[in-house]
Length: 124
Image 1 (cartoon, rainbow, N blue to C red):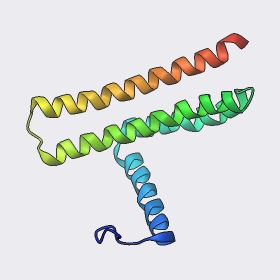
Image 2: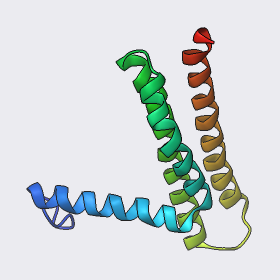
Image 3: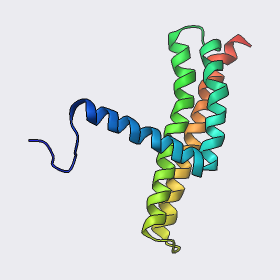
């Protein structure tokens, strides 16, 4: 039995989900400076990763690690938006949630750096 709260099904659901996803990327690009910076970095690094990777495996590591940063930043921005929606008061749990999100972004950036170094360093 279909969930009555889900709305569309089939192809219409896929079209709607795509529209919502693109709206989310556009909203992040409009409202989140960190996302804009990482998106700019991705515009440079994704083509570079496709060019520098020796095979499909290396290309997927280089490009995937960069895209992972964008995914983690979107999730971090979502956490921050929800925390701010609930309350703008200082609260230990709100700070902790935001710090966890920030730490996740930092780890994804570090992972990207390590992946690029491990893949490309042997060629230098």
